Amino acid sequence: MLWFGLSILLLVLGINKQLDLQTLLTALGREIAQENGLYESRREIQLIFVILFALFCFSSLAFARMPRAEARGGHAAQAPALRDGDRRPRRSS
Image (cartoon, rainbow, N blue to C red; front, side):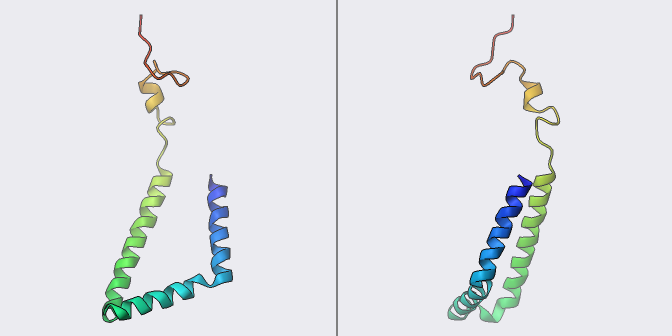
């Protein structure tokens, strides 16, 4: 999963490099901000964006480091009657 994620990231970065999407997105955002009267308060909007992006990165990292339920004895240990895809629990004798 790690290598798949890294390959997708590198693919997106390669497309961005070839098409110069970052400059296009910046120019488009500047134009929209000027049309809507938000250009004067761009520093505050940039600060909010940076904070939200940092929170997203931190929560993604925390989620990626969270152990899986099976590794810590989660669902598999709690429901031993469910085996091999059974939809109903087996009756105990």
